[in-house]
Length: 167
Image (cartoon, rainbow, N blue to C red; front, side, top):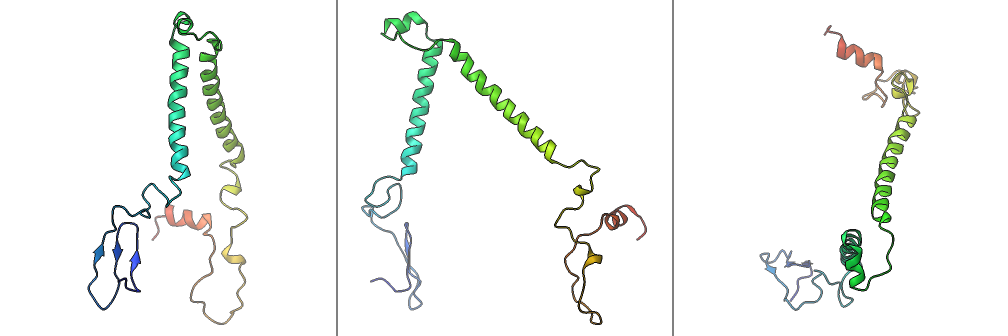
């Protein structure tokens, strides 16, 4: 008999009933709704199938590429493989891919250098979201404010606190 306050989980069922001590019960091994690998009666999850097929395809394609690139032509002809791409592409494709990756990294770094303001620019200290504490209007003229409004600390005040030895 299940308590109305019990919680079901894939591994165990805990009773949260206040009338008796908590207990843990483990489901049977034949239980199909355990959630480990199988999603009910529908078979394995699609992500597991795609991952498995992707890994198998990668291994098979790598073996085919290495055989094509390193096995002599006479051996390929002896087993009946007569049509295949030129060996030029065995070096050209990986070289093109590596050069493309290096160029993309160089382009990405250059784009970041272009979009970053220079160190002497005022935009390295202030932006459109900066707030000056002197520009804030307060409607409470005579009353004391418990907390100052949120604002940025000026660079002159930071320099004064950090680099002046007067305490």
